Image (cartoon, rainbow, N blue to C red; front, side):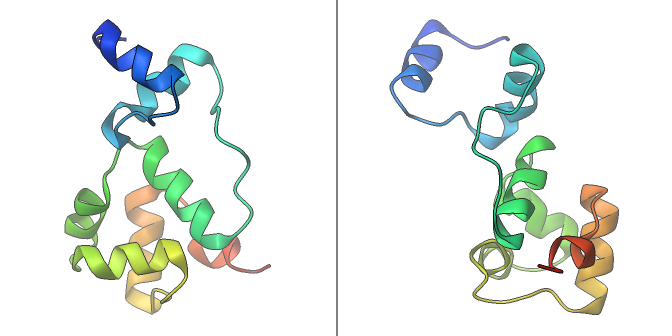
Length: 101
């Protein structure tokens, strides 16, 4: 996977891999080992991680600040029309479909 043994040891002890490494972890295992996302915010975080994006990288791609992107994941805020469309574009994922609980 291109990581050192210490990283793998940390993962085995509960320290989650960096978001940028997540696509490699999933590819190596053949599945996403995190519990299934239950809320729209969790689904957003899972979609972001599958693409190896940090909150900072997502915010940059969305042309918003990190705090705003983080609030979408914790459901303290919801993205509006333009941001919903941008989430679809950046993540290849339907925000509106994911929020219709």
